[in-house]
Length: 420
Length: 145
Picture 1 (cartoon, each protein chain N blue to C red):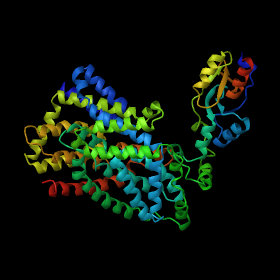
Picture 2: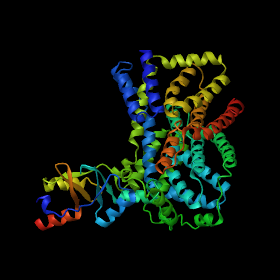
Picture 3: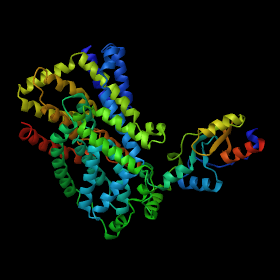
Picture 4: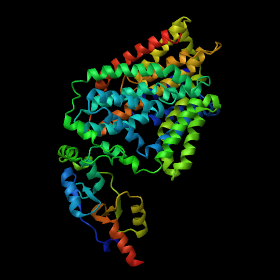
């Protein structure tokens, strides 16, 4: 049964990594097979589903989807581009900054889906090649998403699973290292792409003349939507003081927005990416199967043996291991599988958050290494392909891998010096 | 009511047609969709006015939801159309929505209600007969009422 559990999980991961069938189908078939073949029984399979993660995802999807209708995110991205004054290096920093901040507070996949199409339009207007700009945004989204509990799916899973970790804990422990990493990586990428990013004065003038606020001015519910979204983010910061779970904050915000600005409930619910929700559902059941058959415990024992009881070594192995695993198989299933392992490593010890930060940093930053490592990368490459622009696996890796190594170096120093 | 009694528009292009040829046929026929036909006269797909827009504008336009800030797009459209004009129409067509010539008005109404554009391909024993425009169907219904 143990071998069967590992084979089913590894098979599903391979299918996801090579994109043989839609990842949701792979996860649901894998989960179904585990139940049918007796790896995990039905009751335990249902109990293995982390409903808090699903609730947080659904709530944020509704909130962001309804706010997106107002055009406020387009306005922010355009205004940011205009603030660069048409200077290429300034534009790179501004786009990376906006994408990073949007990722931190909306989630990185949503940020990419909002920012990349506008960037392609800006690239056309400015006469710039779109690929460097989009790659910088993808990388910024994965780094920015590392900063908060809601910024990247690995953090969402960790944050909703570990009751001791609050939204504020994520911000205090991860936002500074994310901000520093974003700054250094953006500077490196701006330098690397400097010869491709040349804007003529006439083109930069065309962007400065765009009326960025036109859509927002004509939009209904802008004020209400922004107030509810900002209020929800403030509530995330205060959730531990208010004794409200992050999932309840997100669903509460979504409910309020539905009441004050959701004319059509059906339309609002269509903004939920149900395929993602069912992907997570299948994943949780498969990880439950691995736990049930003792695989998780064996991996934890192996990690403990390798690191010889050294907490620092354990954190560094988790950081680099999570990054390597995420680069190969997508950071969402990898994190789902590693969460119970980190649980086991801390079994019987006083609560120590360092391993959780190591896992979060490794999974999120490792998401930059390959085009399949994070959902945001897959989405960005997809948007480019629809526009007839191919970004090969190796072209992505040529940029993503050095960035990942640089980011992990910074994160390692952070774990060694700050998280002692 | 029989579909034979309704005006059908004989608007179609062969599978080997280009995007530009299909777009010109569509515009000339003044219908929301034309049929793309296989060699034996069966319908391979439909080419709609939305597909013309997809050919003329960059694909990212479909991913944008707020574009009122854009005032001038001549340069973008010009370069995109130069690239796509010679593309095969089959790259842009969509699966065919067809109704048989001998069918009820209720079935045609149901097809139109589930059709995002206002024209259906009418076939007889699998062969294309013509495009039925929703406006012509509605006009005939009103005459009956």
